[in-house]
Image 1 (cartoon, rainbow, N blue to C red):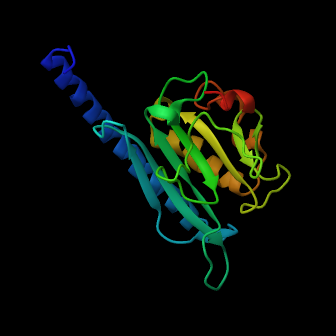
Image 2 (cartoon, rainbow, N blue to C red):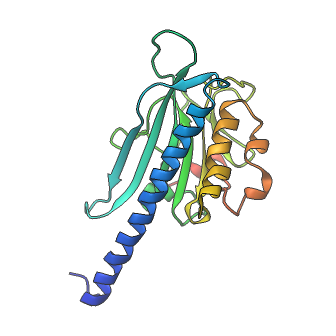
Length: 219
């Protein structure tokens, strides 16, 4: 066993447990807020919910600590008829490991995404670093703040995928979740300009600045 005394070890686990309770509260609140926003605005949005959210999580190698949890909400085109999900919008909360290993960042992160598949830690479909660009599905970094797959010129919600990252400790209230997650998600899905959805004054405060693609690919 570690040379840390028993009392200190117990306090460490108590602290992690307390953090876990706060994270569960944030996760539940944000999940409900995203569902409610999309449901409330279904008459004015080109997409609707395509089923129940998919939740995934990951433990560390010791299997004592949960390092990541993800929420993926399936979306399909609005209109009549049965349609399958075309995109998944959601978030990934990462506390340790490759989910927070963006060069220059050494703290827990919340990644907000719109992808063609749900987040799946087992298959490797999640926000993790280093991130090597794929020639068959290349991405670019827009304005230092958005990883974008597909055409930057496209404004169609189902023609491109994206991800941006936030400092978890900057999200301290429901208003923060609304401002930094819910509102930008809808704006980006509706084709908003990146800087309009994720403004400059967020960089360094809540919004993580991505390095170049070459740096993101480094181990």
